[in-house]
Image (cartoon, rainbow, N blue to C red; front, side):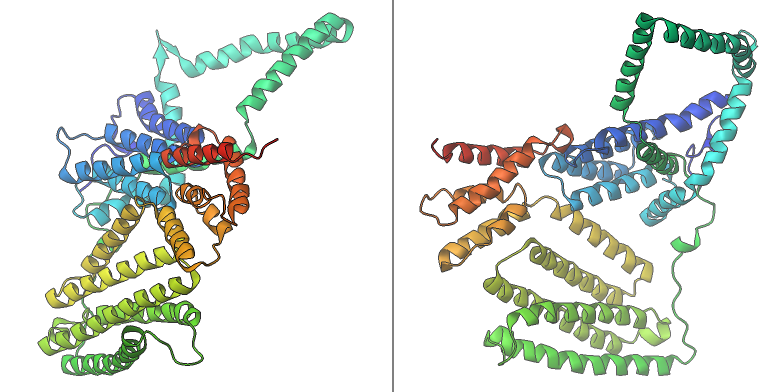
Length: 505
């Protein structure tokens, strides 16, 4: 199962210099791209450029004539994330790009491994062992100096001889330069001018200890990415299928599982009944309970409960088949899964009530996405129970669902949705709008603020204008790496508004 030509040991051994260049060239390119895209700059289109460069470097190492379907699919998904980075960069965009690069590296370098998890984990293991691989690179560099010859001349011997020949001349040159600089003002000014120019070049290079340290870290990570360890013939312990939990007395195990499911089903039924009465039917709460407490405390407690429920169900049905394959046990677990889905639906309703009282925020939108992810996890758990899938399958499908959430969330303009919702609600109900929060949402919200402030009678017009002036001023200080199409369009709208509403002199 070893991938071919994925480590320095697998490269042709006839030429040490060729082996060394095959190792160092992609590492140097990756390090240079990271420095170009991120050092002393802002995130933006640079995220897509960097991960796109990594993707091309990985694909350049592809040895098959026809790429596999998984390689093509991952490449297309990565291309979509790269395009989105040019529209608007976000945390989910960066996470999606990083995950897809790992998957692409696994698909190219470890194509013979059976599962995607095994491939990605092998790439991650390469990162862990990367610092030790510099020893092998150093040995290859020493070997290359001994092997490379030009017309019968040993390079190492040639460099040593050149040092002996030129060393005395360099020392005397420095001595006489110091003598002339001390006695000749014109020559001294000339030397100082050269020194100032050299210093300006050094400042332009910005070769600081922090930057050199960053190069070392990135180069080590790149070494692990492009020249990680070869996968062993037998699966590593973390890629093996987890065995069923043995239960010698399977009748007792089945009865214990049934008792657990029945007891917790009863408790969840009570909780869901209360939610049904107060949230779904009457839309009111008992005296002394406000919606803020219901959301901040209720949603957190509900999420903890449903996650613990998922762990318990997975544990019960990871038991020996003789204990967990009873049909009636599956039906009890299905009812509990449905009750957990009901709790998740009630959490959605809690969020809805809360936003009606306290407006909408990006965090609350993402909590809604998280609730949807948890609901999807329970549907997968339902399938895990019904079809007696392995625990590895359950973990893998939930990991894919989590990745898909991050991948999808990067595309919608959540900031604009939040801003439009809050502005519409403030206008409809004649309520105060938190302008400072809307302004911090980013480019998606700025055109909404401009539209809201277009009415000269708006009492918040001057406050909005003050926030937009800060936005426009900050936009002037960004470099090309922070370029984002959505940001540029929003800044154009903001600047036009500021010009049109400029106070008369």
